[in-house]
Length: 358
Image (cartoon, rainbow, N blue to C red; front, top):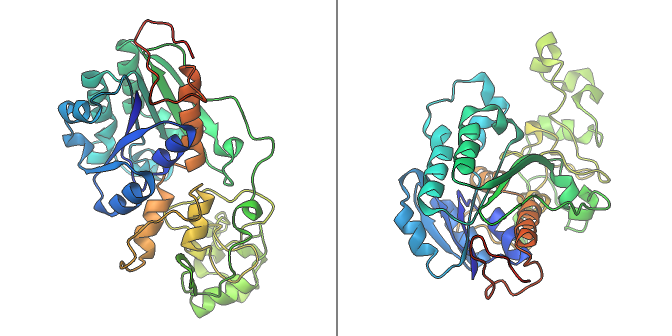
């Protein structure tokens, strides 16, 4: 039996993708209780509320019990490694060391497969190179590269460093690429139209944040793919009129229907936070539209029916998620490396050093 555990699982983007590929996910681990509903309800897997820095190898072995091929997957919080964070001193903060705890668990458990993904700039940091060195010292064959998620059916401009490692033989990301990049139109064109600040009666996640009167006026004069430089002078923010602000056009902009969306952040629901304006409706994209652009199914549930919609919380869960399409590619790549793609993976197993018959 093949099974995976998803460290830093969040709302379940990686798990959802792995399950789509045919990988059985046994459990997810995260320190944020807000992730529990989305992870468990959509993925039929156990959610473990625990800090990975405190997680024991014994607990992982218990979760893996009965599994012949064990996959330890995860995406440590990327904020310490992001380009934005480079202007601040982040070394020594608790989240910085989470990759060392990932390595600690790998060393103790020795799962047959290890995979992780993060922002491209993670490779500039010593903790990442130490992680790779640990895997190599333990006998893993390691592959890593920056992956363009558009090549894997994500309708979003998003690049991520993906690492895959195996004790069972060579492994790498699938080279099956999308014939054409999916666009914003492909992803969200059919969703019901919304007014500024309105929500859909049939899907409360399809809700747009309320714009201020000034931002609504700015939205109305914004062009798809344009910038605030297209606006009348009286609508341009004071900070952008200064010479220091004129080089930051990537905010207050609309998406374009026939291109992938820009990279979603945790604040994608705000018009002023990036190029997150709807291509033609006078509003920023809704929470549901953001989730779909991250690859989540339109029916993916992010909160219980009696819980109030909070933009900041849900924006964080959606924006921080591993794109589902990338998770599916990772899962498919694991199965290809094991010669298990298309098989019933609950009944297949491979022992280290033995040839697998598909």
